[in-house]
Image (cartoon, rainbow, N blue to C red; front, side, top):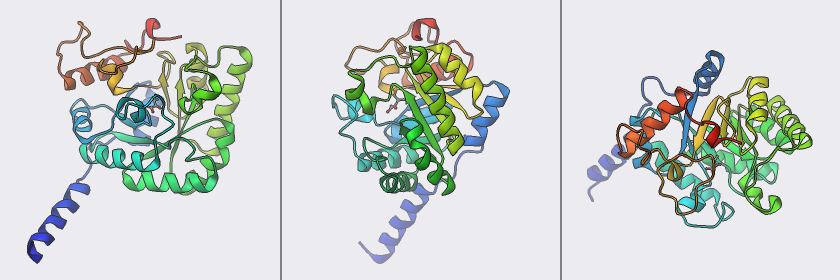
Amino acid sequence: MSYLASEHLTQKQFTQEQKPKTKNPITLSTLQKYKATGEKFSCLTCYDASFANAMQKAEIDTILVGDSLGMVVQGQNSTLPVSVDDMVYHTKNVARGNRHALIICDLPFMSAATLERAIDAATTVMQAGANVVKIEGGSELSKIVSVLANNGIPTCVHLGLTPQSVNLFGGYKVQGKTDKQANKLLTDCESVVNAGASMLLLECVPKKIAKTISETFTVPVIGIGAGADCDGQVLVMHDMLGIYTKKPAKFVKDFLTDDTNETCDIVGAFKAYHKAVKTGTFPSDEHSF
Ligand code: KIV
């Protein structure tokens, strides 16, 4: 390759990576504004550029590059085998395909087990294109959350059913059902929010406790199997397209084959999901605990 040709290629790659965001990209301030005005926001998991682009067409507000990729992309039995390198690879792909959504990236199993590891992992995924890092746990994360916030890295703390702890829980079970568990959930949220968490994500908790948490804290709260009162909703993309091979959980709705959809293509399914979240028709009681 001539010098000029290789220079041209570098220039083209640079342009691709640096493509500007859309006119009104979703930021944390957008989500805070939504929360203040009662507007709900949509979130879907995504792992590659093509689906990320389809989500941009459907105006999905936020994308989660979830470590669920271990199960739905890699075919593993849990999220435990997923590495920071995997998260970086998929985050780069998603960031290239979508210039609109706020991108949240999971810190995978054990990558936030110490402060040093968390700083390293968070730095790497932010440099790959994430806007927020998601960490599973509770009040024990306060120090990490505070150090990351002080260094410009927003965190979303994932509580309730935290899939990286599936072996401790003895399966994927609803959490926060007893008063004691519900109180612990509330104090965990309080600790991490006071430490500087920018968002919370509640998975598989009774809708009553999710409502209390969403009303108590000013940060945006995303729910999955946590009822309609959360500020935003997330589903795993493969679940809501009905293409994951395992039996869907109670909180999953298939938006691709559901007969109430006007269109039945992938962008149409994303649009139907976005609209259902915005209008509060998803999740219904049938999809909640
Ligand atoms: O990894 C993931 O996709 C998640 C969702 C289940 C919330 O954490």
